[in-house]
Amino acid sequence: MADAVTQALHTQQPLVVEAGTGTGKTFAYLAPVLATGKKVILSTGSRNLQEQLFHRDLPTLMKAMDYHHPVALLKGRANYICIERLNLLNDSVPHLSPEGLADLQRVRRFMPMTHSGDIGDIPGLAERSDVLPLVTSNNDNCLGRECGHYQDCFLVKARAKAMDAQVVVVNHHLFFADMAVRDTGFGQLIPDAEAYILDEAHQLPDIAGQYFGQSQSSRQWLELARDLRLAQKVEAKDMAQISKAADQIERHAQDLRLTFGYDSSRGQLRPMLAKPEVNQALLRLNDSLTFAYEVFKLALGRGEQLDQGFERLVSLRAQLEAVTRVQEDGYSYWYECTRLHISFHKTPLSVAKRFSAELAKESVSWIFTSATLAVGDSFAHFCADMGLDDCRTLQLDSPFDYQQQSRLCVPRYLPATNAPNRGRLLATSLLETLSLVPGGSFFLCTSYKVMNEVALVLREQLDRTVLVQGEDNKVRLLEQFSQDGRAVLVATSSFWEGIDVRGQALQCVVIDKLPFSAPDDPQLSARLEDCKRRGEDGFAKVQLPKAIITLKQGVGRLIRDISDRGVLIITDDRLVNRAYGGDFLNSLPAMPRTRSLAELNTFLLTLEQ
Image 1 (cartoon, rainbow, N blue to C red):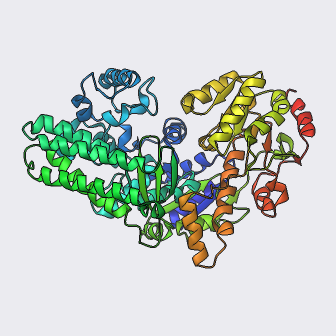
Image 2: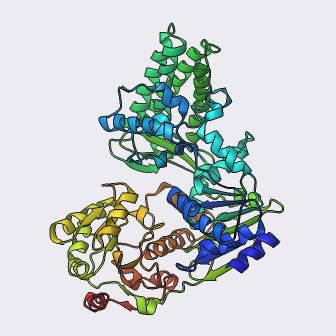
Image 3: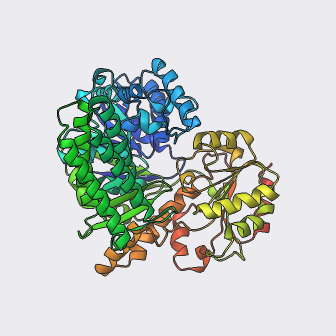
């Protein structure tokens, strides 16, 4: 792999590499990159992987290779404390919970001690703390060069350091956010480079779609209303109409959310906008934005916060019009509701054309790598999604001896994939097997409903620590799981990838169902409709390849080291009863297979030796 990366860096022909677990792909691309001395952007799939790359892998190779050029870690703006917004907050924020107020004090104590301003470094701060939107900035409320703290801004300093560095580590969200900003013609977020290495590249098509489309959330309208009231109190105390306009925006945004029902949901936007009650609520919100626009025109020039609020208002009106104008072809228009908010999305069905324009840049090298890019031995699905017409592909198997180290079981007599109480039935049928695992187990589910059903049974009937996703943050859950050594962690999609637990702490992985996207997923249904119009088989072209790559990620949690041993249980008999089951099996490591739990239990007894 290192030889292929070296060649790609010199020839500028894009390289796509699937490197199985244990090949050491991180070192295989880092060593040639450091050896060339080129300016390089390294992008990976998440902030956790970004930090692992920057704080662990990169320093190891820099020391080994005596590399002395500057390197930098750069995250999105929501990861850095905003000094201006923190100073505007007093210690009694009315709408903050007691936990949020305690988190605010944590941020204040952290401020004098930090050089980076990275909120991820704040001890004890919850990942989804209520205080985070209040102490960080976004594109809408950042004052830019007009800010009195611009010279001390943590984000500005981080970007300046990245511009001067030879190697910059980013994540895919920031990478595509930068491309989207460049498309507007107003600046850039990350520096230009001579080489781009995109790790965890299987995530790229989905993430790219988020940035080449448009989105708007009721959270943005409520934050605008809150900031307008604050600006009025500071810069225009005589203009009560501003607070009235803010109240209208807030009320009509909440009314629009309620027209979509009380439960969390997602779906196609076109049919929802055709409903009279939704259409009327949207009109009222537009009217309130128009009223605020007329009021704010009278306040222009009275202060920085008022002027900046007016610009945000203009931008939000234009965005709302764009994401609710649902007649354009080539896009999926969809909505997503959480308990408090509604968001509208306009997502391109394909990013291939946009990304192929990026690949056409002269004198730039592109390397895409992941443990899961191919379907069988074909890269056609990934290359088509990313517009990679002329590239070199390389598939490298894992060095692990799966024949000796593992077993795969698809048990007989499984409940149907849509059976009621399926989680309870599965957990009950696997109690004996889970109790025989000498070390720990992952029980990976494709829905929260099944996850909760499984957790309930295991906590009632299994004499082990049972940890459940969501009951603590991800890092602490994994620490607790590894330290226990015999725990069962029940989780959904966020634990299918990017998790590295080695040794006896993880000796069993259960996957409840083949990870096909839900049929009501709005983006999936739009892509299937697009395939149908072109006379193509949407299942074979879209659903099957994506499910295979996702399953490969889940399976990859089991064997992480040359000395690991363990079992994989997939409780979905479509793997053996449907023709496409062979496509899944051909893409998985060559594990000995059985349909008998008794036979699997016998193998488990050998793991203690």
